[in-house]
Length: 558
Image (cartoon, rainbow, N blue to C red; front, side, top):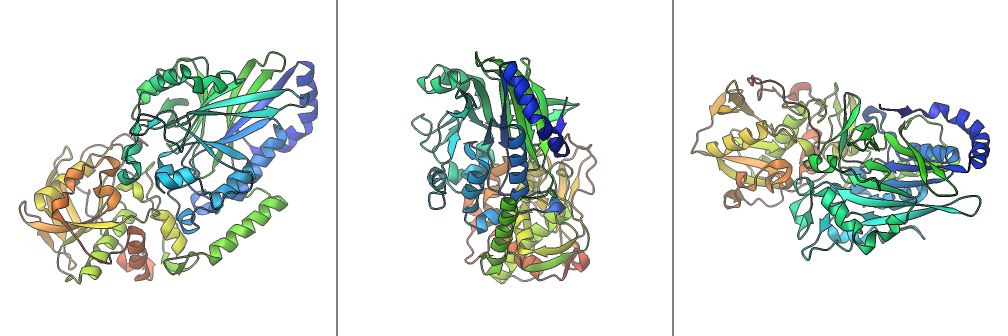
């Protein structure tokens, strides 16, 4: 059963901490709390419109929990950054300081940890690290070309807690990352790496290795996993390409699982052995918490309780956290990227525009249309193309991280919606090739439907493409011919095989080179700056997918 822990009860708990400690001492037990922050994605700034509480509120919540549970360890379950324009604009210098503040020194590796490349991953922000702080990445199922775990990671790690009587409790963590990482990170950043989906085999091999000995000797042992879970009918389930493999794990050596990646709040027990499992959605919306009752004499774990704690974005901040919020706001005001201040207004959104892979990933969204239209406009401008020449923008669903709320849209909002700033690539594809691309995109169950601009799609009742038509600026239709070629603009991740798209759909032999093409984010900024409001007069006519008759596909999140 999912169990939520409200911070409204903290003051009451603090009142009984002393009594609880005395009772625990008499019973020779102690409560050890292991807390985890997953999929933070550089969510430093609070944004109530997107349910992002912000780093100061996360810090305050963790401090409150640590007062209730003074014997504690805090770790991260991966995707600490990536998908954040603010992180990119500040060159990552804020993350080491924040992790140092909240006491995180061990983290799983997520797929977005590779966004900056393997060398920067190995450097771990060496130029920005606070004195005395470092981060240990744990990941047992990644290997380099020699078959070894790369130097930027180690398979497991431990952390020690000192108790009042001078005794210690050691907590061990074994790290895993989703085997689907090659489909969710730029291939150029993963050169030479392989990711095993044999999670159970990886664990068994590690346990037979001397490297596991510190964890084997630990009093509490956890799997720290960037391998997603979800809730179905109140019960946690795996949400991963190789979920069946990890679902078969029944090793009693591990006391709890701390997961991430699927952006869902999860709390309960999983697998036949009933492992306690927690996952705190994303952007710091929740803190994962596992409480261990430990016999102080034998160091034996007596019971394990999983909980998740909702972070209140309006929590009363302490002096340190308030000063930190001021520092973040000053950083927002002073930071520029590509000549724009992050706080600079771009346009005004007259109503909420939703683009969310948990609610509408199987349709053409207005956000998707505008992003693709921005790509097409970028090519027209760069290539000095006539307005009546067909240019089709396409985009994979997942790189558009959110829609827009109603209200003023800033450079930062645009960047956080389209944060990856991917290179735009141009291809001259035949009508038949475009049909194959759209066909693939309409049946992309794992990642969501392809987004397009100015394209009307007619399908059979089973959802297969019958014909495509380009919608001209005057509203007329031009039927795409099988052998005739048309210009298509896509971002580099999409065209390089990301999110389940084959590279065969974007043949390099048919790529055209255009100098001075903006990146995806810059193209969208330019598009919005030319419009006083959105959708407004620029509201796209959503013609694609209107004629699709097949039933809604089941929601799956990876």
